[in-house]
Image (tube, rainbow, N blue to C red; front, side, top):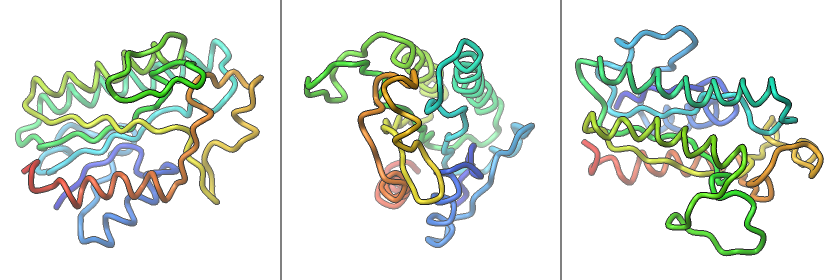
Length: 194
């Protein structure tokens, strides 16, 4: 099975690519400047590309984060619209920061989005991903907190209270857990997508 992947050389992408290749899938990395034709023949697209949110949120950083997440996603969906053989599914990384800072409130996928930079960004970002639904592509938004690993990820120092990292930083996910989540969707749900 061919899986096209943005962010394939990034922190999660490297590990996920290795897992999927070990399971016999062909990974088609979509590197900077990729062409829409690179999506042709892919059974699935995994969208991981984007500026990290685990950094100090200066005005310049917020613009980089917004542009990479929203403009990058819009570019991907526009390319999917032009693809001659569209994938059945778009698996997209998202963040639990969509819920905003809610203290000890128990949140589920049915909980309404919060407010603030990360929540507002994520609402717009997921809306851009969900435009693929009109193309008859199933969209799965996988919302993670800060992903941690031995070779990278959002460390505790990057998400201290004064770092400006905002809501969602209290939730930590191991790299192996995040990559297993994506790989599990590929293994267990594939039959429903194609």
